[in-house]
Length: 248
Image (cartoon, rainbow, N blue to C red; front, side):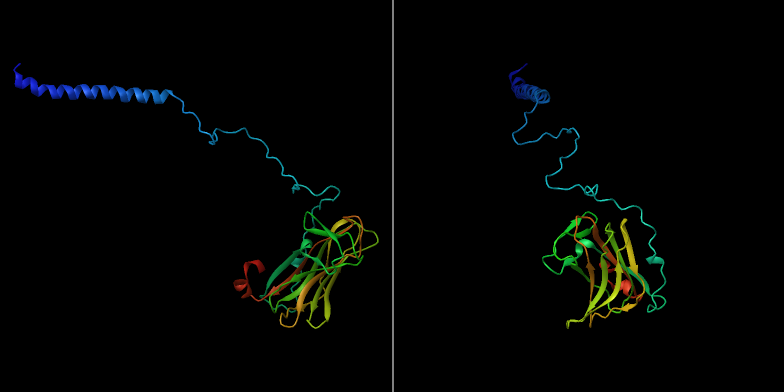
């Protein structure tokens, strides 16, 4: 081999040798990375599946799976007759039947001294103050609606007292009028009673509507409780399209 040829081969041999050495180093590094476990860093939580367990119940939180001890659970209710009752006399054919239900816990006492307690299911009972404490809840209905049923949902175990439910209008000038009246009755626990003998046209310009409850009883709960009141009313068909969903 002559000298010029050898000079040309030397750079080529150097390149081949460097490539061989570099490739071996990369292979060794990859092998080491595959066999070496990476230590977990402080503050990083393992994502391995945890053993399933029941979450602890926070202190002060009452389970909603059952009624408080000593409070009977409502049994199966009979079919509600209000939806199938006859149309109100003041509601023309084609008017739409609607309902407004207000829970007992939405009622507030007229006198700050009338103490009350609430129970699961939205019921309240009077536990202090005057024995004929009055509790009220605002009732907002569309102007011109025809109201024809007031239903009182209650719990009554008293053999001597009954509570009273009223639909009342106020004129803003110190006068009021009770439109409907539905007392609790019996002593068998949960029940409901209705007044279906009236027909009232809502006039939001002249009168405010209020639901009133008079307990007529103070005793160990839950002797007498208010669980809610419901009214049935009728509106023209176009109300169904323009009333807010909360009213429909």
